[in-house]
Amino acid sequence: MAAVSIADLIAAWAPRLQRAFMAAIADITDRAQVGVIAAMVERDDVEGALHAVGIDPVAFRVLDAATAQAFEAGGNHVVARMPVLRRPDGQRLSIRFDVRNPDAENWLREHSSRKVTEIVEDQRQMIRSALVAGMAAGRNPRDVALDLVGRIDPATGKRQGGTIGLTSNQEEWVRRYADELARLDPNALTRQLRDKRFDGTVRKAIEAGRPLTAEQIAKMVAAYRNRALRHRTETIGRTEAMVSLHQSQEEATRQAIAAGQINPAMVVEIWRTTLDGRERDTHRQMNGQTVRRGQPFVSPSGARLRYPGDPRAPASEIINCRCWREVRVDYLAEIV
Image (tube, rainbow, N blue to C red; front, side, top):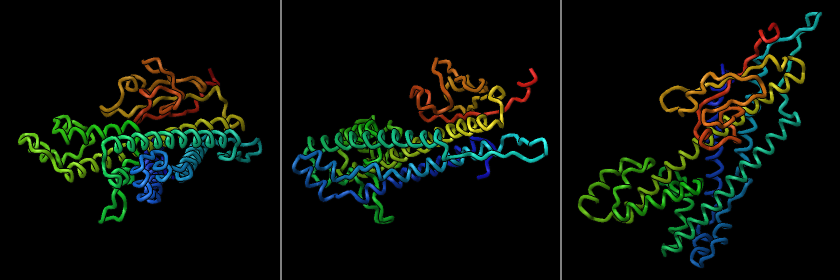
């Protein structure tokens, strides 16, 4: 993959990881047993309905595979740009990124396991909340089931507008939005993820004091879910690309040091921020911050980060972050 920086790799791999996550969600919704889910809802059997949905960690294997590919691409990118060493006889000494290195494999395995576990557990919690809310409201069991997995779009033949794939928080946003629409609450018009094409209809209903129909609300809520899922997918793609590529950068540098290709004292790391007016204040101030290898970047908030998107850092410093870390070999370090 042609790229000039880790930032290019992040931009290239984020969409691939997004597609991998969406493929996993599509696999789950395609396999979900709508009739069984509805039957379980009718019996107030939350766990039975959850089982029928089929949130299986194996479904996210496609995301694991894409993460591993991004990790390897990042490592190859780094070693390809390292200085070439030669023996006294002129023979070139080259180094390759070893994705099978035990440290590399351990990181991939632990990271993928932790990420999938987090996704699956949050999905199960979200589905339980949605089922309980549907049952408590006395809604039609099949409607509750279809709200979970989505309804088939005649144009694409694919399920759209379902809750599966959203976070627990996003599912709560959806329920509040649906309630606001039903009550003609003007707050419905302030939701960032709403489909603004419906704003005119909502305003007219509020002004006339005439309730929206169930069909209108269903369409608006489905559109909101679609936008929320797209937002979630973009966040996962960007975050996973950042973490896997920065970690492969770290691993590739470690392997090169172990092979004697570069001196660790020569390695400097630079924080780069995308300056477009949407960056965090803390990250704007961090732009250009330079540290020696092994030292963390320090945010004005006090947070210490190994690299942008560091999963060990507070959420306030990493969610939707668009920064990247540049690694340079400082040849003057050996002269000083």
